[in-house]
Length: 88
Image 1 (cartoon, rainbow, N blue to C red):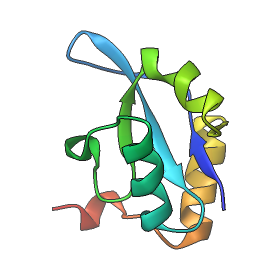
Image 2: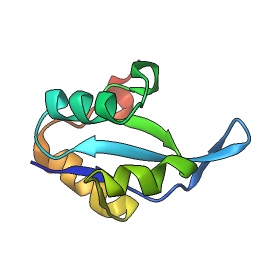
Image 3: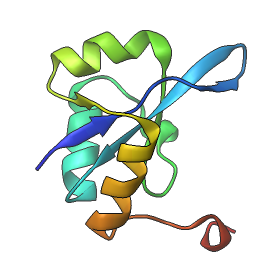
């Protein structure tokens, strides 16, 4: 089981944001987020949106830094991916 985080590339609310995912289970993802003070309101069906300034702390806690492409491929392979068309 691995928690992955990509680069903060997505601008919103005056900051850059990254995605935090699990390659195996939402339970693992929620536990990791909770242990690292990421609020549940940051969860978006299959990932957490995390601000750029949280990245060093998350990596120090065990998240693996990967590219956005690698993160997406791992999320799809895990079976946890929620496609854009299924989000509504």
